[in-house]
Amino acid sequence: MKNSAVTKPKSAKHSDCRSLVDLGQIPDFDLTGSEAGFIEKIHSVRKKWLRDFTPDEIRVCIAQEIGVAFLVPKALAILNGNPWIETEHYEGDLLKTCIDVPDEYWRDNIEKRDLMKEILLTANRQVTDGEAPNGRQEIRDLERGFRKFELNTEHDEGGKASPATS
Picture 1 (cartoon, helix red, strand yellow):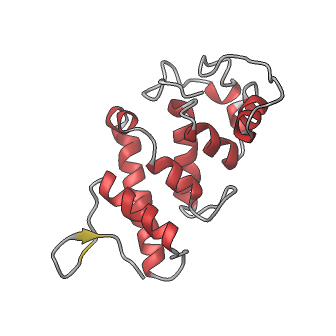
Picture 2: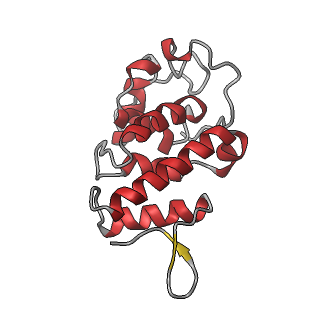
């Protein structure tokens, strides 16, 4: 199901009133009855206007690299307001999905990459201040994000930069 269209969209103009099928991000398809849950979810949203996507639908499509060029900006808008939003699995699952977006997207979308860095720094501050989850999974995701986006906030005793771990 993965789609290689992860760079800049040809035209983002009016994309909110179009579907993934309309935008050429996924072919229209019929279900056979034996699909996994995420395939059923993608099938159910394939013709839905992007403006009507829920955070979880955005997460699922991005995780499958479907509509990345159109959906990552929507995800970043959500994360900018709440980096630790829980869409279905755990607090920060949308943040983790955006961290996992292929490097190609971030290289080709510098402004979005800079926004993602700001979101990661905000998420780190929230953990440090005790305003966000600080479980093992969340901290691992944050650490991976810091490595991928080459962020530094503090230095441990070995001089190595890392996010705050409460």
